[in-house]
Length: 454
Image (cartoon, rainbow, N blue to C red):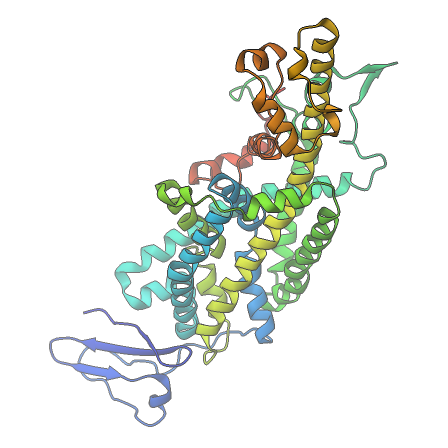
């Protein structure tokens, strides 16, 4: 029978049992090995009391930063806010926390304990449990290769935007001109930011099947991203450990700055209110449960093998119960922080769109009043643009449906405008990439992208 790995006691402890036809030998937990040194007989071979030597993190803080830096990423900043809005706001947040407690923390603990106890990477850990399970470790390594392919493309995009951000004015601030008082037609049909991304950055072609030439800026950014990865891993954890203090902590500083700025925007409280308002009906759908469970695995990085690898460099006597709870808790707080930032900004955008909607309706009503097409009893109470949201909704619901359709006015509510803003934002995938897209995404570097919507 294969060896059985047991995880018991305070922190992380191991026990092996081996059985064959002639031998029955049990090796107790590591703290008991110092008192008894069993002798193996039969064909089982010697069993090591201690795992092979391995480099270690210089401090516990560095180890926690490594685990946190791996788990926190686009899944927290990009994907979680999108799923939170799509699946009932606060209801999805509660559902995520429930599944994090029931699934995420126990599985994270198992990976931490296995790597910390056996002091090996993903392939070595699964092979130690049973040689037949070594393929699981190899599969996790293959998944990491796919993730590295598309994540470095995203880093290349980020490096390109970072370089452009030092320009004044910003290249995506306004549409380029093709002549005196003439604006680029493509930009006029969309927006400056959309035009800069799809045309000036990716240089799109009319169809996905039509290829294009290399984009020198993106190729350079991709080479720079891989160079950063190589330099960080040049000396193993000695070099990557020092990088962690910047690469892990700096995003939190940026998120805090964005949160403070976002809370000062007009309409930010409306966005946060929508975020925390639970739509309990979402709990009755299988989609919300499935996406919450997927987000738990995606956010914590379970199954990739990296958690096991990082834990193998940690102290063998470390309390991995506490480490698992700490990493999972900080990960959840990061998702909450990023969601606050996103919903504050989206609330401000929705408020501006609501104001534009009210001005448009005011013009339509003014035209109807001037032409005599609006009965006197249907006139709005005072200036339409000065009405608050509830007052405007009350007046609009009081109009007969036929008259409302004739006027062409719409229900200018922040919630509706928020849905429209999220619909536009979600035209780009929110971070839930499938394995085929992991392979296809690097093609965005040498080849143009599909057409962008007007």
